[in-house]
Image 1 (cartoon, rainbow, N blue to C red):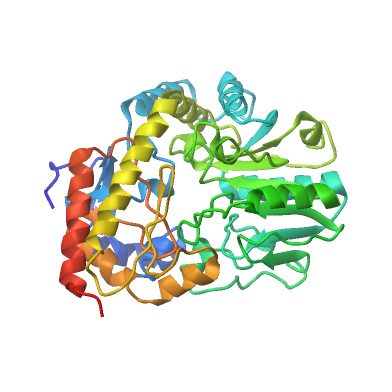
Image 2: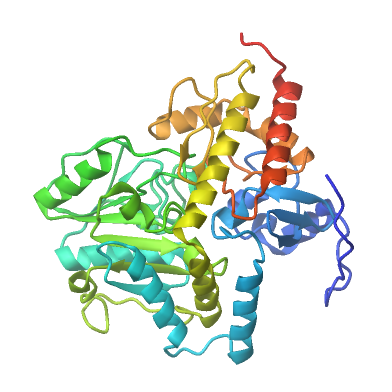
Length: 439
């Protein structure tokens, strides 16, 4: 690891000088010292590094240590941190005002960019988070169909909506929980949780089937051949709506999202992360006919004071304008190189490892066979191997997500130097932790 240049403390006074001191202070005023549970390092142990700044492929903690970052804000920073075009767009927008509570041209332009890239998508509504997008998409599906039952899949995460927290993947699984206190049984009474990658037989009281088209909250689990096609056919058979939760895959997987990648068109989409260029954002959308049910056109209410925030719109526009088909080809090549290097690093280790890759998305499991559902992902997490690997890599300047159910997010800013250093770090960490030679 190298040391970053000294940074001015800005307006902060009495700033803690170490990660440990800052985290101790945070625990006095923030629940668990964090604003999202996985950041607390509970899943891996130890003290979180406290980020001071980020640039490109790197984050820098308050002690001045740099890390090659594969968290990338859990996906939004697809261009790398603090991309000059995004920073310039946000700065320009901020000079005009940070929030209006009124329509803007930025909302129009970003909506045009999103709709123009997704086959079958005709209208969207902006929100402030992916959770809001999923929540609103579910409400819309119930309003359109007049039904109440929701089908979701074990290990798929659709935000912290009460009705969707059952068997909810990384957001909950990283905390060792299967749901959440404070969610009454009545709220999840109409939620049916089924195994991922198995096409269910639906009843005609199902309003919506919600699915991550490529599961990325239980590690990376691709859809098996026929799964998404089968869901489409089964929803059509009973008149249910199919919801693709593309908060992660939307404009991260492909120029046209999971719809273009898979050839399967859902009825409703939820988006987030990349479309805000690193600022808080979400969106849900559908055909013009389905979206006509949303207020003010129809009876399904949804609103938000900061929805369509002008800074988020500016960042999203700048980001999507740079995400050309060639950019996705470049991202995929980086992920391929990383996947091959990580697999090679484990080739002589005493345990079997799977390194799934779907386009630019990348993960790994401690498993002898490809993982196809949450049972396999949980077995990998329960192996106990992730935490020591996480810390060994962190000591070598590589930052992965602090939980075994997350995936890696290479960005366009990760160059040959960063990829080579990452592969070398994996090789050295595996050798140090487990030596060579299988049992």
